[in-house]
Length: 125
Image (cartoon, rainbow, N blue to C red; front, side):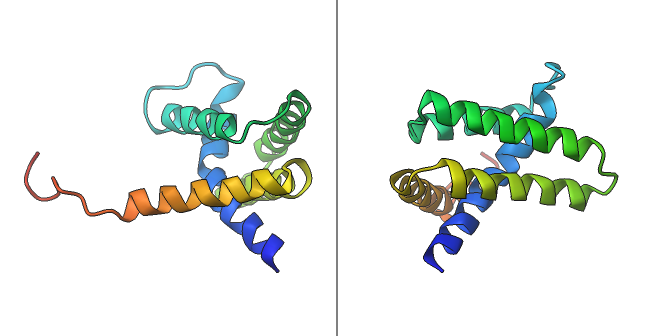
């Protein structure tokens, strides 16, 4: 059960980043904005997990396969599910237990950042 929860937490952290990064990776023409931000966040996250060269190769292969599969899916929900499945596969088959724990910690930090009070909210700043 704990492994399943870690996988779900990891999926929540990576799903948006991976989807945006993979969607723009092959075209090389990502417009500045959320897609580019997600691509940078994914790169930063993977850097923090200290993936080995072998792990990086495996992650790239899984994401490439998901991207190719998603291109054939007409439904946006189906595309999102393809990337969620890819992230789950990465977390469960590529990451070490220590990396999964680190991912859980990073996810909690991210969650805390998003729920922190915004001092400028409503002030027009």
